[in-house]
Amino acid sequence: MAYLRAFGSYLPTRRVTNAEMAPLVGADPEWILAACGIEERRYAAEDDTVASLGVMAARDCLQKAGAAAADLGMILAASGSSERFCPGPASQIAAGLGLASTPALDIPVASCGSLIGLVLAAQLSAQVGPVLVLGSEILSRRIDRTPKGKDTAILFGDGAGACLVGPDTGFARIAGSILSTDGAAAEILKVERERIVMEGKSVILHASRKIPRAISDLLARHQLTPASVGVFLLHQANLNLIERLAGTLDVPLERFFVNIARYGNTSSASMLIVADEWRQAHPEPAAAPLVFSAFGAGLNWGALLAVPG
Image 1 (cartoon, one colour):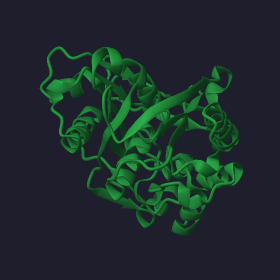
Image 2 (cartoon, rainbow, N blue to C red; image 1 turned 180 degrees about the horizontal axis):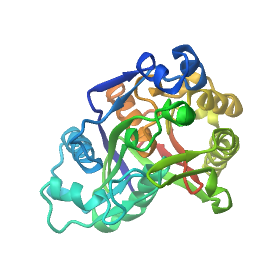
Image 3 (cartoon, rainbow, N blue to C red; image 1 turned 180 degrees about the vertical axis):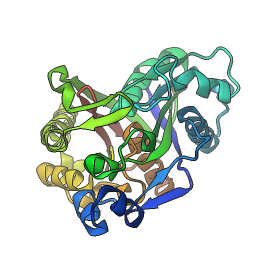
């Protein structure tokens, strides 16, 4: 078995509001808010790196779990915006935590990477011990802040999230998961030549179909329905998409913990950041099922179920 022990996060201090973004991309602040539900996003400082943000989120998570870096059996770090392809940020994060031999592996998948990390951690923790899953992104350096890049520039922000998965105890037990990949559609969402390339309408179309099916199929495997879920903790891609998913699943929007208005889309970090904020607001043991879900480059998507006990 595997359990969720704690979450953590780190957000840069610089806030970029719609009022600041709008003239750069040739849009009105009101249009940006209506298009994606974002009011502001965070941008990393010049000397920040994907790894340095990850280290901060990792320390926050370990502190909340009452754990030490030396306790870790493995680190899994997801990012679609690492400064270099190989090695990615995982080994640097491990070094930043003072670890010299703990295995640290990269998951170079934008948006869905942290979900993949959680699924892998649930399988691996029984063998290696506690697994720290990270999502860390600096997407402000991979967007075109001009009218040409308007549709992506308004969305993305920077940040890092973390989750500690353990084999013995936690506030909720990981009960199951679903992961899927459709490489035939990979061209609609990718990071290429240091820029995010996204066909927004196609991405929304795929996500609005694939995410509810993954969630419904996973819940059905465990004789559960969407109505029985206490909270949905999703990748924060676009508020309009989250609202559409709530309608498709026939679940009140209030069951979806949402923070996209303040941070924007932080890709693979977003699901863990939103989970950390939810957990801070609800520190008690889980009383109802939790569903995590993400959709991203690959195309990769899926869902993970955690239950009380």
